[in-house]
Length: 324
Image 1 (cartoon, rainbow, N blue to C red):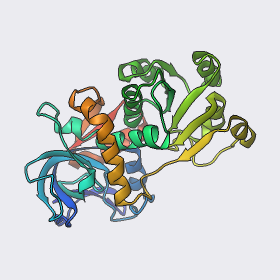
Image 2 (image 1 turned 60 degrees about the vertical axis):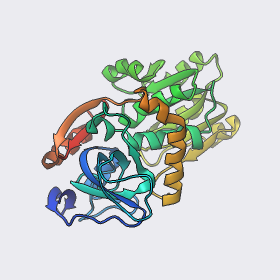
Image 3 (image 1 turned 90 degrees about the vertical axis):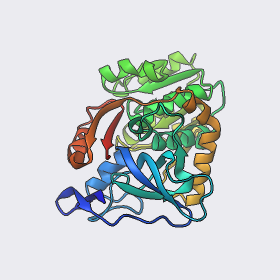
Image 4 (image 1 turned 90 degrees about the horizontal axis):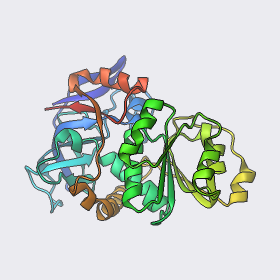
């Protein structure tokens, strides 16, 4: 089978043996996949959890058709149209734990659309509902809202009953489109005045929950914008891995600062994350209320061009790889 692999001089397409599913796994014939920021790390030679270095497979999610299932898998069968978070998803075939696999609802959702959803759904539902302990009627801010995961986060907030959803982007054109995906107030995180704008929009209280994909460069501003007893969930670090942290402000507001990643989660934890996500969000997915825009689609052989587009940070929504 063809698969995207990190070679000595960059990402290349190689012929690899077709994988076989273990008893708890599903073998998927991939039709489409989509890029995530972690793919840039692996493609640049960095480690992402247990994946990294020359020979590493690229990709985190996909959509396609079930080719075969392991002996312990009871609720999926060959021929099912599915989407899944799946390591090595830029390939003609991939195996993944059955707990990461979801049937594509109905017949109207394309493989390209479905291949954009698994990582965003499990990441943002976990960050907002579980780690962030979000309650209906609270306010929500998504840092880095124009990314695929960020756009999903705003929509999830609306589904879960947020009274105010705030999204940030440093790009004016992208900010103008955030309202299409559940954003009530779009702010420029590069503007030093944005925490004051949050305070004004919340009658001086501050926001209840911040899901942060930027981190270092906005860490203290996040705390300034947060309510007393607010929560900040650290999902991404696009603004840097290290930075200043105002410990006194953190203590003064009694903020819960929560770190999350899938890199250190067990298979059982990921299954539970997906179970909870389906319980809360699947009716909305089936009704077509949760979706992500596709910025551009590439063929598998053009994976290097797709990675270059993501690296340039000129896209809105998802970059898709069509496989077959």
